[in-house]
Image: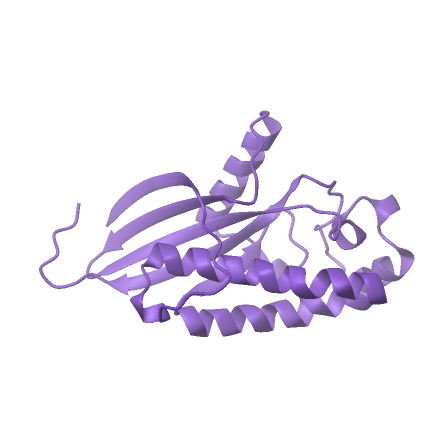
Length: 199
């Protein structure tokens, strides 16, 4: 297996593209899919919070976002997940590679190296006839997040009640605005063309 080191880069968020997903490079597929997910969340979450409050908007993250992820996976031919060092749903716990990226990003912030959500991390591996690209996009705590993931004084009573019922082992709280909440993790696999010389 050949592995290439993680490269820190600036991501390009694409709201839409005229190209078919099959015509895109793995890097563009991953970047575009992550951008679309962020766009869809912003489009629906803020108005819902304003209208229904945080408690009345929780189903957007619990049901609507996973449905959007499934749709993007099919459209772009990749796998996508959200994970964190402190997960709400144990099923979203990070694997080894994701944990290493989360710790790297968390260490950068704590070491005084701030970054925006435009920063992305890529790693590429090759094994046999298959090439795998892994893409990681940081998710930072914003004002729309504090009602469900913030410190105890910022989480409304109705949200606390829902969390206690749905996620009795919840660890995804205690964050402040501007901190690293987690990452969007995307994996794109492709066959290595016959005769291509890999490095």
